[in-house]
Length: 582
Image 1 (cartoon, rainbow, N blue to C red):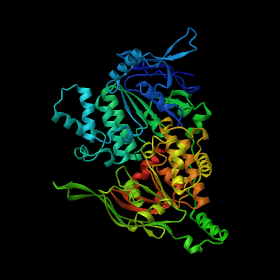
Image 2: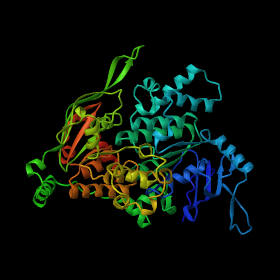
Image 3: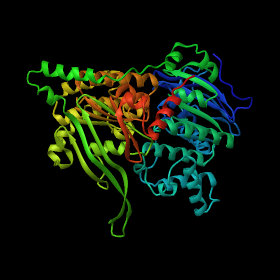
Image 4: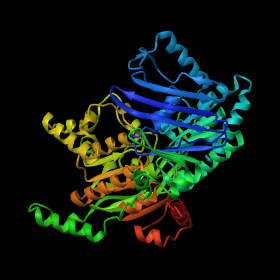
């Protein structure tokens, strides 16, 4: 297998990189070189070793993992990548480093983090400090790079420039915001700005576009390519999106279960893939959404089989309805805490969702998609002003008191965009999935069986049940979050970017799974996504939101084939361009 060698004088060289946990090999003999102005893409399904191999480059892996191999960084020399020392001549035993050597190793890595090796992390909500504003966190990165040469005014100006570079609207205003006040896509772009602040020699981008819509994906990667050329950086692009990888990389490494399956020039691999696994990644078929007639047949069958079921006309009532739903947040407050002006995040949303149907809500990052889902689930903070009605079943949920609202919540579940931030890091997978069943009073045997069935449903092995979230990959955590929702057998599931962190093969599996559950159990979905091919494969109807307003709503195929609004046309065109391998 040919090792990628992009440059005669590489900035970064990695040889025989191996990471082990107990008896399991997580990454096996990974080798590559990368030079200035060049991009190496590492692709593969969730858990293949993509992210963990890059975290090791920065010395960010826990000490319970054994790391061996060699790493050379131009201008620095060889770095102590290994966190163990060989204790025998035949290298059969590896012992932990002594305290002094471990401290020296950490000091070497501290000297290169940010300045020489920068990283854009996969989950910005967990990488950003929730207690500090965007401006303070950007300023901290600039001070580390500048060592005190810039004044406060210059730092503030540079922060605005960085946010402008990553296409954040109202950059000056965003500096005073906290991470939770930004959309997922905005948080991702703040992470990119922070990574670029110190102008590193090598930029590691771990799924930098998962939270972004198709138009912004290309904008951000085009920006990264421009900055890479401008500053002479090398880039390691970790992604599950082969369309983006093909367009923006020079070389590709395809990984699976820690092994390098195939590697070489991007053009060659896409033109003549040799490994069957590589071919599989390139030819994913999401299938078609269930026809409305099929869903009507399910409702008819349900009323026939269940003698106590309600009449068919009642089975076809809307599971969800919103009437003039609007959400505003305080924009300016007075000295005594009163709100002087409001900023509208969502305006006059009207939707109807029949039993067993799925509706897709699409739009750019910050358009109001997630705000709509949180408002529907009545999960917005007390600062938000909500107007209009949300009716689930026959219940206007904003009129319910605490006790009936709690009963209703078991019928409405939500899968959040960032699974690591939405699941308890102190709980095992088993505890996370069974938590709702415990509240319902199910016994231990029932809960154990339900957890195992839930994990099997989302294609996770039972051996993961006793692991903690930090021991899972991003895709595995997303599937745990989905299992937690499905195990409750709700009537309605709100899915906020549930496939954004998943590789293409797992996306296909999850979409097929959601279709199957929709058909068998009549569960309804509100599906929020920037990935239009996934929306098309699951939803019977689509709403397009721009700047908090619904600009178009239609049956899925009608919208994709004959979009009416200019904004909808742009989104669909960007999605088709992204999916075009020709």
